[in-house]
Image (cartoon, rainbow, N blue to C red; front, top):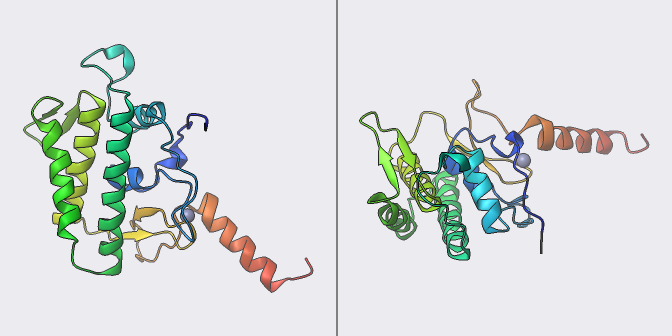
Length: 192
Ligand SMILES: [Zn+2]
């Protein structure tokens, strides 16, 4: 059994909560890496870090840390992969996956989320957190921001390309960017 993931800001580099949630694996390419969403506790901790759950002491609503919530979260993440991969590849949206996002959103809307007049979404429970993520994903698909969604050349993590040139290639310079540079250096300097 893997230890509960300790989330840091390095796990939240995408510029959008839905993309950050899709990035809760060690890597997506060249093959799927370890699942960082490895327990119900890791899910709850992620939602806290993403500010999609009130801090535990706030006590509004109950925290559902059941295995069912984890399964639901992983299903939502799978839908995100299908959808964002299509967006990156310039393909039409897989509407069955999009329908899955609406399903997820509907399940929590009645009792687990408040939405302010300004569109700000406040989830009360883990269920509500997943609802907000689904709504966020829908917003990204149907009303895309000017910054395109891209995937890191090295690890496949998604991010919004906010660079001026729109040519960002890495999830982060700190990790993949530096590793790619080091690999290039080694291949150019084989004896170094
Ligand atoms: Zn990367």
